[in-house]
Amino acid sequence: MKQLIPDLKEFFDLAITALAAARLAWLISKEDGPGNLAANGRLWVVQNAGSDSWLTAGIHCPACMSFWLSLLLWFVPRPLRLWLATAELARQLVRR
Image 1 (cartoon, rainbow, N blue to C red):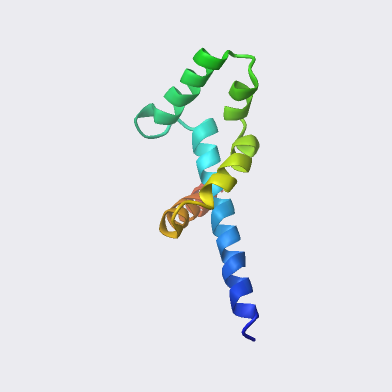
Image 2 (cartoon, one colour):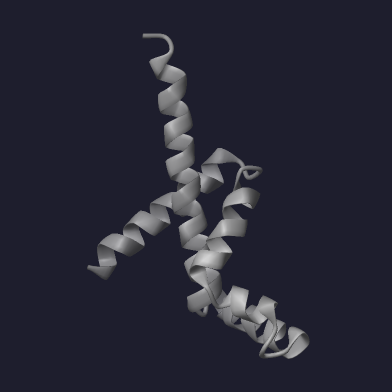
């Protein structure tokens, strides 16, 4: 029974991180964001990297963004990941 507890914690950490990555990826690649921060960030990438660059393609792709964000989020404190995961779950529920 003792082996089951760490596995559950790891599973929940994985799920929380995946949901947090999905939320940030969607925000960065598709939404305007607070104060148009995400939209301005995408515009900056297009202007500086060029409209046909791999960086511009990547920043407009939620799947591409989530790949890199999921790695970055392992170094983010758990409470922040929980907040982002909750925001993603809420976004999915409101969307339906």
